[in-house]
Length: 563
Image (cartoon, rainbow, N blue to C red; front, side, top):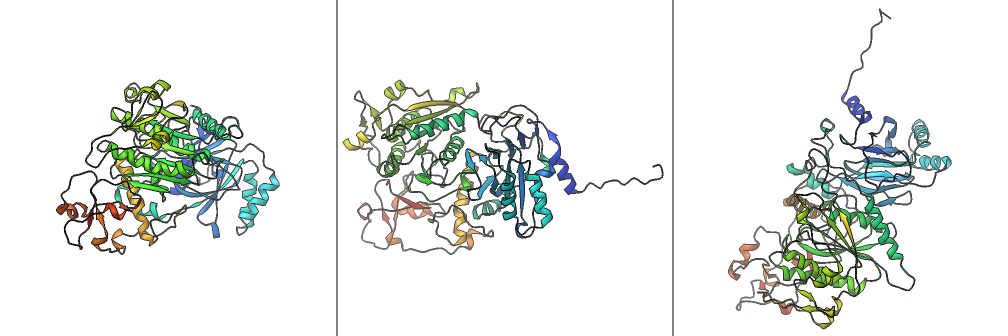
């Protein structure tokens, strides 16, 4: 009507956010959500170049009251969404797959950590069976019993066409709160809607189809032949930043779909998965891993302090430490519980020989070798592992002779030799040929600037150290294994009450440097040190002064109880 006054809609910040959420984008712009064309297109498969859609306004339903900081998320068949930030996720209806782990209504709520310090995690609807409407109604009414009748009605209506319904709630942990309190890491869990563009976006973690095939074959191998021991021992190797840790995380989650627990042997002292850097450790894992290492630190089953982020300077000590930690698994769990072995990314020169030592020690049933594919990086690949390579390539500490037994290689070092007796040589022999599987790297991302959100290895080590020491703020023992750490307010480490122990019951040893005894106290001042258990006969005094610390002649391989 000519005389009518047209009302202009005011674009509020909230409306701007809604507008961003509902527009269509191509995968090469911002793949926040992908939607499969058919149910058979499972989420483990590498994404195609088809057009994908963001969530619509009806995909999310905000809650109130007792669920004020929560919402319901409705997923269509085969739909995938990308996550940024941290949240508790409880699957109410259907099944979703998160980094290889199938999560359904029978599971407890899981914690997802998707910071910009690493590639973002995605969730994918993964159910096969069609769920009855009555089941959906009953589940939603039970979950939303304190919500309004109108909201429950909306939830039931939207759930009719949904294949999965998730309850997503806010999350805060000791580690993430403390880490985010530092200026250089304060925004790693934040999502800036003004920066949804190719230059500033984070990488999206896309799981290749072949990963699922390999994980399934390992699961089938575990079922094996009745009466035979077929529990897999999987060793993962390859160059730096080739995707070893990501694949190890995916395989851990996949195996936990059919196992109550698995064991994880960490041999990469520079990029550890469950501890601060510098430790070689064995871990029992019973819950899926949905985040980078600093979000799921835990107390190891056994750990040895190596004290460096590379084995280059002390290869003999590195091999001895791995041998000590692996024996815990070999003596108690081999043949009963699967083991995943993550190795270091040093795969040239001496690094190859050290890797051969690890292979001969753990005797893997399967070796997963990840390789670079780009022309500029292919020369950094580990030589292809074949039967001939395993037979003819000597290790650093162990050499494979004609009888397929491991001989001890004695090396004159300031702290002793790598000495393996006859029984240990037999335990280190490769009793059967491992199955070797080759995988192309997925870390060489496509796009205009794939490393925009990547943090350096030094940053990752700093994040792990900060997360580790943040636990002292809670006044809980660091040695306490916590699958679900409590949320706390951010505080300073300086506010913690220190413990005091007399010098004369301690022993001090500097591992990677020659330090005169009269300078040893200066060397540990303002330093992070490893706390280890020592036998009394390995501790010595200088002179008759009983008020000074003991010293240790040789670098010990001793159980580490913390930093």
